[in-house]
Image 1 (tube, helix red, strand yellow):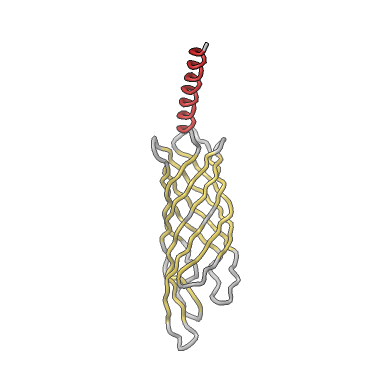
Image 2: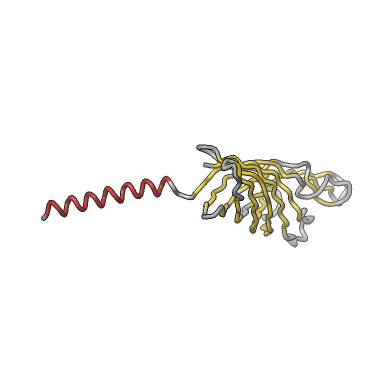
Length: 194
């Protein structure tokens, strides 16, 4: 009777081990990196009058995680870094002052992947809240917004490739210390995930 109990425990352990291996292989969690460019300047065009403006369109890069749920629905959270170079036409003497700072964006997006007859290509739409924090030569600003987007994902045997066009509408920070940033932002992003 004791030997039967040991075999039973060993069979349960083997079943549990195999179940855990299969469950781990089927985890609906993806991770990767996204990069791209902002198609709009964060503070408008270079200054011809008083105020702060961006000097060109800067790159965006950062990691992301995605929880893949059922029926083509997923939730994605990003941490996107964007360096920004600013120009400020000073009120005293009209001199041009430049500075750099970092912008961090944290969108949390619900995504829906459309099913097509071709299983490797999936168009997607996404929407959700975004949060942004600035640091560097500007005071630390925290701004909230709403992001909408769409794109295409290509599912290959080991990796997934994606391209997205995102629009974010930011709330005004309400700071009197600096000029208000552009509240409309458009980004083109490319991603690689596992």
